[in-house]
Length: 93
Image (cartoon, rainbow, N blue to C red; front, side, top):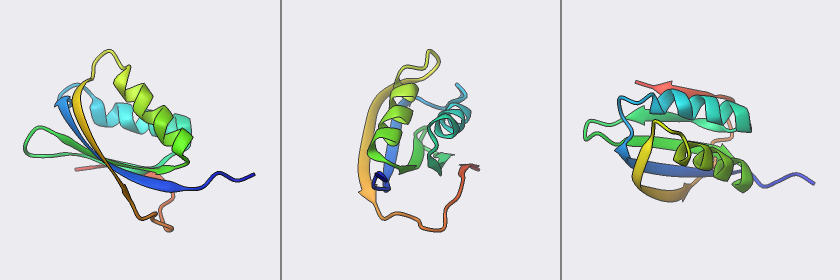
Protein backbone atom coordinates (compact mmCIF):
# COMPACT_ATOMS: atom_id res chain seq x y z
CA UNK A 1 0.00 0.00 0.00
CA UNK A 2 1.40 3.40 -1.02
CA UNK A 3 1.34 6.17 1.57
CA UNK A 4 -0.30 9.46 0.58
CA UNK A 5 2.19 12.19 -0.30
CA UNK A 6 1.67 15.51 1.45
CA UNK A 7 3.66 18.74 1.71
CA UNK A 8 4.11 20.92 4.76
CA UNK A 9 5.49 24.43 5.16
CA UNK A 10 7.27 25.24 8.44
CA UNK A 11 8.52 28.50 9.91
CA UNK A 12 11.07 27.69 12.62
CA UNK A 13 12.11 30.11 15.38
CA UNK A 14 14.77 29.80 18.07
CA UNK A 15 18.45 28.93 17.72
CA UNK A 16 18.10 27.87 14.11
CA UNK A 17 20.72 29.97 12.33
CA UNK A 18 24.45 29.59 12.80
CA UNK A 19 24.11 26.04 14.15
CA UNK A 20 24.10 24.06 10.88
CA UNK A 21 20.29 23.82 10.84
CA UNK A 22 19.98 23.82 7.03
CA UNK A 23 22.55 21.05 6.67
CA UNK A 24 20.92 19.03 9.45
CA UNK A 25 17.60 19.45 7.58
CA UNK A 26 19.19 18.20 4.37
CA UNK A 27 20.73 15.14 6.03
CA UNK A 28 17.48 14.35 7.88
CA UNK A 29 15.43 14.71 4.69
CA UNK A 30 17.79 12.40 2.78
CA UNK A 31 17.71 9.85 5.61
CA UNK A 32 13.89 9.84 5.62
CA UNK A 33 13.36 9.96 1.85
CA UNK A 34 11.73 13.41 1.90
CA UNK A 35 11.97 16.15 -0.74
CA UNK A 36 11.65 19.90 -0.26
CA UNK A 37 13.84 22.85 0.64
CA UNK A 38 15.17 24.97 3.52
CA UNK A 39 16.16 28.66 3.63
CA UNK A 40 17.43 31.15 6.24
CA UNK A 41 15.29 34.28 6.62
CA UNK A 42 16.46 37.81 7.41
CA UNK A 43 14.62 37.85 10.75
CA UNK A 44 16.70 34.93 12.11
CA UNK A 45 14.07 32.27 11.43
CA UNK A 46 14.30 29.38 8.99
CA UNK A 47 11.65 28.41 6.43
CA UNK A 48 11.35 24.74 5.54
CA UNK A 49 9.11 22.74 3.20
CA UNK A 50 8.95 18.96 3.39
CA UNK A 51 7.19 16.58 1.01
CA UNK A 52 6.59 12.89 1.69
CA UNK A 53 4.28 10.78 3.80
CA UNK A 54 2.98 12.06 7.13
CA UNK A 55 5.29 9.56 8.87
CA UNK A 56 8.38 10.62 6.89
CA UNK A 57 7.78 14.31 7.60
CA UNK A 58 7.19 13.58 11.29
CA UNK A 59 10.49 11.65 11.40
CA UNK A 60 12.41 14.62 9.94
CA UNK A 61 10.83 17.04 12.43
CA UNK A 62 11.63 14.66 15.28
CA UNK A 63 15.28 14.51 14.17
CA UNK A 64 15.45 18.32 14.08
CA UNK A 65 13.86 18.72 17.50
CA UNK A 66 16.26 16.21 19.03
CA UNK A 67 19.46 17.52 17.48
CA UNK A 68 21.89 18.73 20.18
CA UNK A 69 22.83 21.92 18.26
CA UNK A 70 19.34 23.10 17.33
CA UNK A 71 16.94 24.80 19.77
CA UNK A 72 13.52 25.26 18.18
CA UNK A 73 11.38 27.48 20.43
CA UNK A 74 8.39 27.71 18.12
CA UNK A 75 7.39 26.17 14.81
CA UNK A 76 4.43 27.25 12.64
CA UNK A 77 3.14 24.46 10.38
CA UNK A 78 0.84 24.69 7.36
CA UNK A 79 -0.15 22.03 4.83
CA UNK A 80 0.44 23.26 1.26
CA UNK A 81 -0.11 21.74 -2.21
CA UNK A 82 2.21 18.93 -3.31
CA UNK A 83 4.87 19.82 -5.90
CA UNK A 84 4.59 16.96 -8.43
CA UNK A 85 7.84 18.01 -10.17
CA UNK A 86 10.08 18.02 -7.11
CA UNK A 87 12.65 15.21 -6.94
CA UNK A 88 15.20 16.26 -4.31
CA UNK A 89 15.86 18.34 -1.20
CA UNK A 90 17.61 21.69 -1.63
CA UNK A 91 19.34 24.18 0.63
CA UNK A 92 18.29 27.58 -0.71
CA UNK A 93 20.33 30.74 -0.33
